[in-house]
Length: 326
Image (cartoon, rainbow, N blue to C red; front, top):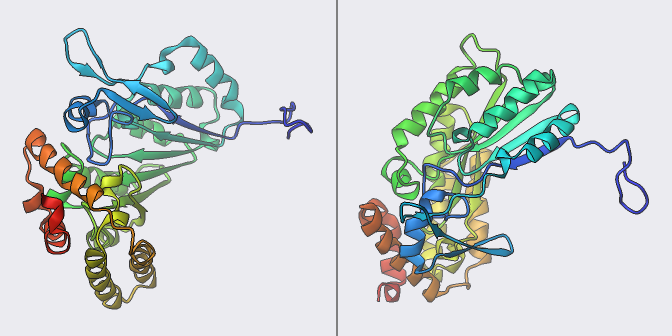
């Protein structure tokens, strides 16, 4: 539906809209930063010694607010009349909307979008997709879900129990798990909601065996899983761990794979084994040393102890990369 030069024709239609209503979030996960969580402002300055951070190809600065506190909140462009005018123009042709954050369920503008879709009479044609930390359930939003064609939620659960609470500070695992179960239970109640839940996790230095805990959890919840390999910050990427630690992980993952009778589970373990083999010789002790330094700093800032909470990670590093402890 474009002209020869790529310009739009009258037939061109926007079918899918992806929205990130800023960086308002109630978590400050170790793999995150002020770009996606405003709570990271103080810890970013303490951890990296700078008020600057990258956002795409631009460099932003954490400023002091009127109370003299560091503030990394995004400019609320969604509060402008211009934005809502543009949104109303594309409503008639939408078939899908994707919300991420920050935490999308904390942003009133997300609910406002749903109201406009419902009022326009098009919600029954639209599927909603979310990336969420599942820390909050807004009953008002849940009621709106019944008006839509379908709901798909990718619940970020990067590990279980104490490990989860260290990685996704200051989240509470029990709260998140209860919220996921409550959403899933709506399939069995008198709710006319077509809802799909996927448990998503990041595999990195702080969570090398997360698959062994998330796969059983997802099976218990009757959910699908999706695993991503940490690329940044680089101090959390498995790429840079030592060959010895990678061989140890491969041995343990191979044992897990062989003990499973589920082909999909076997493939998940094999994919991680392939990843480790691909980057077997990418060891960078300076980067892994940065993991130790940053985790020690975060321990003091957030009152946790990564060596006790992640004993398998500590043992891998201490056994195969003792030099990174300085």
